[in-house]
Image 1 (spheres, chains in turn brown, red):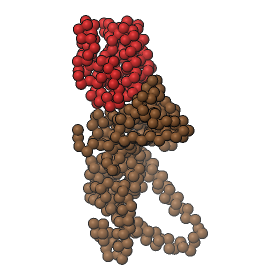
Image 2: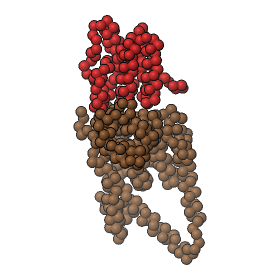
Image 3: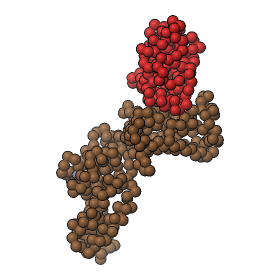
Image 4: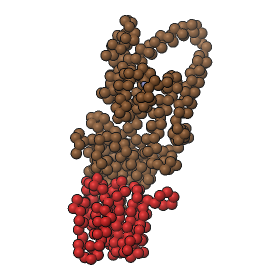
Length: 337
Length: 137
Ligand SMILES: [Zn+2]
């Protein structure tokens, strides 16, 4: 398949086999992070881009040949032109966001306002703001590329496909038939490589700072929302949210502050992993903390042992003076019920 | 609890108080709710208290403890507490969490909760919750 595409593009060019080799090497290197259904389109896109970059390189070499003699001259003017193009593309991309999206993104990225403050302002939760920021970034990347490459998407399906690739949201990619579209649409195939590479930082991971009581609620609500993307039933979603609540409370009560990272897993099975970390005093006796009878605060020792009972996997690492990390996982059940 | 919609409401109906939670509450909000409700139970010399928790997203160990403590404080003031509206998934989770205390009766909804309080007031049916599927408190 890859070989056929490369041949179609470069004909009987002697370096076609090198290109196939390079393409396959890149695809194999990326295969661990690309889900099976996407592997073939990814290979196609990679092949196309390897060909394109080879042309570009050849072109650049040709253009630069006359400059070999005056290497001492800095090539600043060209660099400046490139930067100017990138800046105007970014300006165009930002202009295509809604006023609200733009303001939230800039406040977060440029002014450094944290998601909790933004959530308070929007009357929303920190988790929801984080998810919204991820969607905005995904759109911005797409709009930036479109503006930079001066591409007018030929079909109505193009933007949704590109945004799904940009966000790394695999469920959304399936919904919009992203793989199929890349095979049919040249501009999208061309734009998709930078997006696929970006997409490996996926928006199926949430990082929530936990510094006070409201964060406990924000974290469990966000974890439930994220888990709802998988085929968890209502009971499992509530189990997960409750376990997150318990481990976050542990952070607030014993360490003062920390963070919880919630991540959707694809391998070895689909599931959700919650990592709660703090840099607090640590738990001197983990065995005892996990003992149901051990009373830790307010006459209640249910937190950690309770969370352990709710999840499929539960591990706790604690070191005196270096804080505590709780890692717990719930797997999607293979059949409903 | 200034600004924004009320997180909880506490209404008086005859000799009973009906307390409804309207949204997910964090720990300090739960503590404030406990404080307000216990205060009103004393103030109105209520005989029965219904706590509608249908809008709580989860009942974790802290929420469960708070509800138990409210019921215990109410009992010391001579009032009987019924928790209503625990969704099945929350009940299931509470059971898994290991919160088995048979102290606080539960009922499916407000109507059933009121009937339970009325039965108790006339002494016809002292402690048992009519819905067998509810978890033990
Ligand atoms: Zn397209």
